[in-house]
Image (cartoon, rainbow, N blue to C red):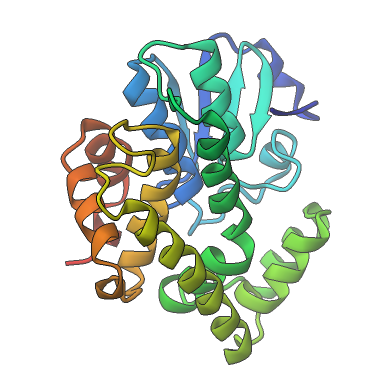
Length: 254
């Protein structure tokens, strides 16, 4: 569980569940799906990432890297989406989203999806769909660099969303990361309804937003028929329709 002490002290007075999130953010999708699966009441604080609504002193005072999502629960700020969904399932245990047979393996799937975010998911999406939409003016770049203290995020910005071009080598490296991860996921789904077998768990919630965004960015999923079958089944769930499609239907692959 990743908890941060906010510089923006106004959030410490918030009661209940408040989610700061972005529509197309796959990390935000995970948390929205979990909240819906749990049937929880939550207050939405949507930030338009294309309009750089997260690049403000106010929001960096909530999330120190200016990323989404951030969950404020009774004034306590939680970050890192996979930690958030694990936290929600622990404190709201019904209906359970934990693997009844192998919780450790389930958590490894969460860890893997998080580990490829900066090395695979973000570079691929920015190159395929977002680069022209998130370009910053000189003034916006300067403001972002003033607020952003995280070295990894500064380097990512320099490569993918700053004024410079995208190096094809970085895109090729991202594709290799994704290929390895999806090959593993496809193999795990062979003969199984869900990632953990016959039980829908946090592992599925962690990975289906990755599928959605990568499919929208034209990743060749025809190489992974088990993933395609699994994602089609997930598309029938209320949490998918309301936690993903409702917020970013225009990103879905036609």
